[in-house]
Amino acid sequence: MRSPSTRAREGALAIGPRQGEAPEGTGHVETVPADAHRAIEAIWRIESARLIAGLARLVGDIGTAEELAQDALVAALEQWPVSGVPERPGAWLMATAKHRATDLIRRRKTLERKYEKLGRDVEGDQESKDLDTAIDEEFGDDLLGLIFMACHPVLSKDARVALTLRVLGGLTTEEIGRGFLVPVSSIAQRIVRAKRTLTEAHVRFELPSGPERVARLASVLEVIYLIFNEGYAATAGEDWVRPALCEEALRLGRILAELVPTEPEVHGLVALMEIHASRLHARVGPSGEPVLLLDQDRARWDRLLVSRGLAALERAERLGGAMGPYALQAAIAACHARAATAAETDWLRMVALYDALAELAPSPVVELNRAVAVGMAFGPAAGLDLVDALVPEPSLKAYHLLPAVRGDLLRKLGRFEEARAEFERAASLTQNVRERELLQRRAAECAAERMAG
Amino acid sequence: MRVLVLAKEGERSEAATPPTPAAMAEYQKFNEELVKAGVVVGAGRLSPSSQGKRVRFDGRKRTVIDGPFAETKELVAGYWLWQVRSLDEAIEWLKRAPYDGGIFEIREVSQHEGA
Image (cartoon, rainbow over all chains, first blue to last red; front, side):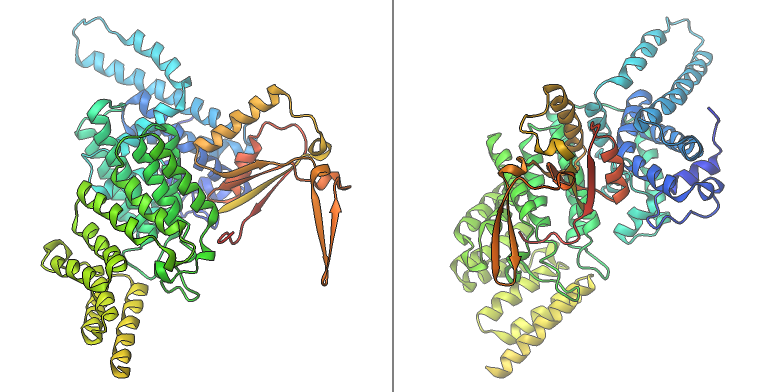
């Protein structure tokens, strides 16, 4: 196989712009007919994670695995437009990458032998035998190993998110940057640094077991949920939601649920995401403004996702044991999903679930949500007592939902002036333009109600 | 994006006999691959149109028509709902399906809120 230049490899990295425009400065891509290019892009999207995973198992590290996969992609971009797409494109890509991996490993071995001239019986033969069989085995373990690697706790949250979307979602740096409203160069840097960190920490391809596995899995779930939440409640920017990120997270969650079907919390997370995603359309008004849960038109909830979510929750519950934080949050979401109207919500059950969650995973944010449920179940005064206790909490100092919830409860108690001030404060704290508008509207309503009262 | 994949299997849509075990096994393997990739969000196989009904609307009038229906080529034998990132991705997945006949149609679900 021809060795592609670095420039060509960068061109391959840039594959993906939706509109089909060729990235600048990449001779290769420009000459590819548009439909072949689009087909290759789609195939890459389907195959890249498995490809990188299989290679990571072979060569041990993510960086090399991704480079090898990219090289195979470059070869495809060169050859397929001329020769046609092979019947089994995934196998073609894997075979191509495997050739290069074998070369690479051989070169590494030669180097190693040169360095350590010690006549230690080289166990290399054994290893190259493994190499042949390894690649043909089940992809599942490979993929799981890759997920564990990309979500390794040695990496920062941002790095884990970017690397996961890159190597498992098959997203380009452009797409990740767009999703998170971060410059492409920062994302690219984040990924490069993440790979370097993994190398420096000697993180190799592995399938952890026992308590280590539990901890690592928690890190994976956290990353997936972070991606989902960034799409569901965009922390910044013009849009209230960015559904593409939710879809990526859901896909990763569904894949993971198939890979580790006996882990209740994986199904708990999937259930939580499915049910939340069912409301994506309903939580955006006609002009892009947010519509809060209790005000939503429930006929607009996506029934398919609701039933998938409830099924996933059932799966988590059937696996037994105490419910974890994700399953509990999913059960809370399911409470809303099962109520035909907001008025029919079972708030007592909701309070009980929040009590359990607060005990299992105590946090000021959970307390705040519990206060909302208590306010609904036992009246705004009871809710307000709980919220007031949270006001001195340092971690909620800049959290816009604290004054927003407080404003809501005060308004229900007829304390409009205080409520208005709280909504104003909440509006000044949020980074999301749409949410700020909503909060300012609430403040104005309170001012009007005060005048009327 | 969500797409609906319609299996228009022609004459086979009407066959009362189930597919052979070998064909079923191949189909299941393919379906499993789709599920593992997080693509499938819904799927179903339909009974022959002889067991189906149609309701025709004409102003205020409703007429119930019994199956089987004549235009066998257009008859749907089964469906999938897939969550994919692009139509191209759906095409690439569909190309891998273990079928040797019939027409499969991919349509984007442009609005999928509500029932």
